[in-house]
Image (tube, rainbow, N blue to C red; front, side, top):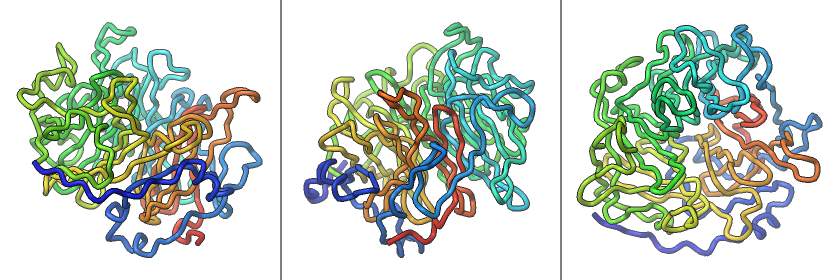
Length: 468
């Protein structure tokens, strides 16, 4: 194992200094670290040199502020009737992905992070319901080339706390339960904490079958290596010891729908000498010789996985492991924050890590701010995706105003959207977080959810011609 920190970066500007410089943009994230490696190799990335698309324009309808030239369409909102007639649109809109369909159409599959006390549960549908007591699940929309909703229906029901997930190379969605409640808890009739595969084009083809070999824990997100078929998984455990970063080695890789049911090996990442990733604070810090240790009991029949005995050398934990995606030849994953008061070894406001499977190398790529006022926007990155313009789109999950932030390959930050739906009061306003940011297959539309009140937006505009 070698640890090779790069030269120290200059001290990042404070949140207030960034706000003062950004003016009407309103962006307040501080980033440390070079982002070129995230986006190198694409023509869009190589030509990108901007700080955004201009200031956000207040929405007269009070839903979503966007830069001039951009517009949105509301695809659906919680409580409205599903077009299938199966019941109302469920609440708690979370992770989401878009898939190509025939004749220029798009399949959009959307998670609903409902717990036992969810406001609007996912309706139970015969053949698509795992546990009648579960209130979470997914809905699937089919859109035409102009983002008009052609259909909207239940894709899976009877699951619990469907937070994030990830797409597969064969165009299905892996939806993740962010819980490890067993049968008998909160009225559940079956164990929860699994990943389920959802075919957005034909949900009955995948049904409601848990992929038990991928483990039972508080899943957050997954990313699939498109060449090897390895599935990487993040765990957002709510208490110390915190979650692990996993990989699943399928017995039948890249076999299409059903291949993940064939079984495989679940392993957890061990960074030698690093029991807690929060202690790493310097961007560019690299660890070679990353080890993967077989999980003793993937189903966690008696003990949650993160508490299990991984033998000599232990295992590596991290607080708030959330977003996960594949880019180039590496997998990237997010730690939204770490707090010593919660039990982490150190504090931070967000990290992005990169793992290179060929080199068995882990690198801390980005550190998020703020370094002063945590009440201002910009901490706690959550869902994250690559944008067709060559950068990142990051959903904010902190306090105060809620944004979708864009990040260029040079580390420049800009506000792409701001939520305007006040779920608090006039005197003490609150705004629902953003989640599920994703782009259409042609890159012309950004889809994003407001978690509360559950709202799904389609955002169009000059994505490939950013303002200088």
